[in-house]
Image (cartoon, rainbow, N blue to C red; front, side, top):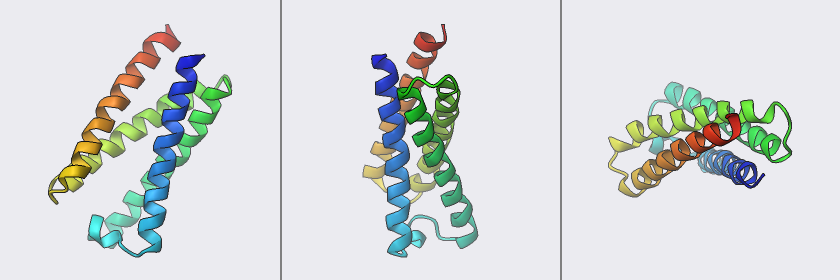
Length: 123
């Protein structure tokens, strides 16, 4: 039960922080600082919102111990990991060192948590 709560909180936090970040960026019209091309930015932000919604729903479902929650959680972890790796590539070119440290740390935490959850909750 403790692992489900911890994993759910992580998932909800990752989804909420990502959504909040992009909402702030969009409202301030600063998206071009992150991704220059509007077409590329549109699809990147859309993908990140899909990841955010999946992570929030999966985290809540995992905490509530819904039967489908574990599946959505693992799906969301995959989306989170993909988003992090993609962001490392995008922002690595721009030399955002602090952001890169946060992203690499997040990738390590996400992989570790997903592996532990898989071993403990699936087996």
